[in-house]
Every structure is written in C-alpha cells, then in structure tokens.
Image (cartoon, rainbow, N blue to C red):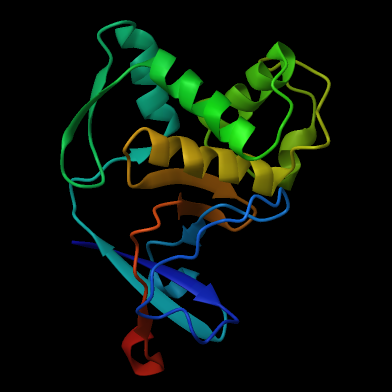
Length: 191
C-alpha cells in the first residue's frame, strides 16, 4: 500500500467520506495529498492508503494515449480494474468536468484547459503566462485551482484514483474520489 497525507485546519475530517462538491467554481474539487510525511504541513494531518498498482493521471499517461491513438493505453483503475484509456475518452471527460464546473465550452477554452489541465502536470498560479503550445489568451476565469479541479474530475471520470500535479508546493496528488476516507495521523506517528 502507498500512503498519502493531507493537512487541514479542520480537525473533523477523519473517518468520514469526502463531502460532495456543491458546484461553486471557487471550490477545489478534490483533496491534495503528498506522498511524504515530511512534505505536509498544517495543524491536523490525515492519511489515505491506496494499492500500489493504482494509476494516477499523469502527463506520461496522456502522452501514451496520444501514441496509442484508437487502441488506447492500459491503466489500473481506482478499484484495481484494468482500464483501456484513449485520448478521446480524456477529451470527453475534460468537457464533462468543465461543464460540471460551469466553465465556458467554446472550442478555444476547451482546447486551452485540456492543454493546461490534462496534457501537463503543472497546475499552479504560474501557468497564466504565454505558452506557444497552448492557445492564447489566458482565460482568467480558470485559475490554478480550477485547473487542478478539472484534472481531478477527469481522473475520476476515467476511473483513475486521482491525478499527479505539480503546483506551488511541488509534486502532489489530487483526488475527487468521494469514497476516500481519511484517517487521522497523530503527531507521534508523523515524526
């Protein structure tokens, strides 16, 4: 099993499933986790444990989808099932996630969000700069948290346990899986 850690000011997250998201665009849809005890910070620490073989949405996985075209690429889903994922599936999941979050679905915005939230692992406040690989201009309605949320929802819609992201804190993982139950980590367990 792999262990992941989440820190919060909320002392009451243990032993209950994640709350459903209410559709507010300012709310991040998922929880961020680090895979190292020493990387987390905050007064209350929580842990989840996931099977070693579950796959996360990563830039490498998306690249393999592109290379495999119609055949897709294999991945292990959040429940241990074998998945065959295609780029078309990822693009559709991105549109569904954007619609769920209330974002504009014009072609340029969808292309931009897919490029920034799915094709690359970087999802922080620095992503607003010009990038010749993605269509411009930067759409200010979608900030770093918005991109992280889209990425988490796409991973969930594809059947994956979550997504790897690089944000202002370094590499972490985000999951929108409502079945996750957090276990409280006592201070002496963290050292």
